[in-house]
Image (tube, rainbow over all chains, first blue to last red; front, side, top):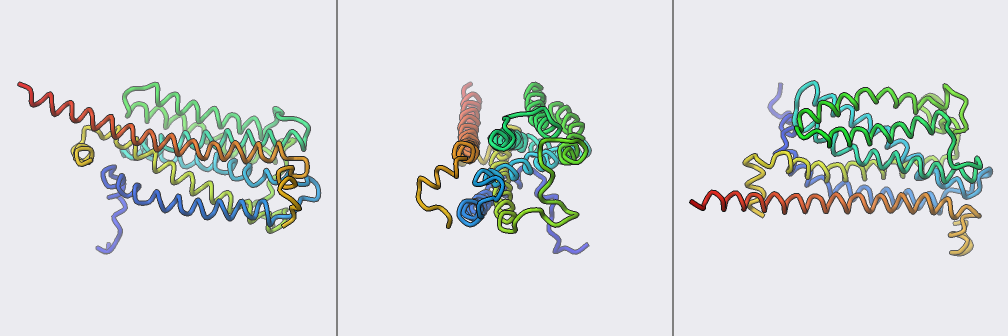
Length: 248
Length: 62
């Protein structure tokens, strides 16, 4: 082992992570601003009109990003919850707590933008089909995680109970992702997949990807902001928090 | 650029309600959430600092 190595474990201590998060937040907001502007510019001014859906397809630039983030945040949240369960690290439970509300909001946005897209294209706001129903279950899983962890006063027990719920709920993620393959649904199949070339115009794809990256940067920024509040609340009896607050 | 006028842009080829309903609510959420998180952080710092001062006061009184 070389001495030059970065001490990653150092940053798993709340006292060192708190100032690090504070320094990172403006950078992620900056990246968010750049990617959001670029994505919206492509989405509204560069990408052409769709030959089937006219201008209505432009909902894709928010819908796909929000849907991806709702699933991805859940996996990251479950990962941190599982790490907390396995290694009893303090920061893990806080990270899971910080991600849940943002994930729930993206699940809501996925359903909301989906409804607004479904109405003009399918003629209905909502159908109980596999893709839509499993995404709704994802929203309920987030809400269940938040409600459960907030209902238990002892934070360690709250983290453990939440972790079990989060880990069990992971089974829903492949169900959402593959629902359009496994069942006959109204929702279209994946436009982008790892195994074959994307079935959409390159510029539309780029706009969509850049908008998704913007939402990713947003998620990191807002989750880091939230985790700082959680760190202060949970570590309020420690010396470093006392010193930090006294110096204000 | 394929929009002939601003009203053309707003109309979104007849899909204005759906497109702007999607982008509008997304923008609203992505403005409100950071605002609330920032507010929470400020209030948490204030509350904990107040508690700390109260504790220090309590220790001083005989």
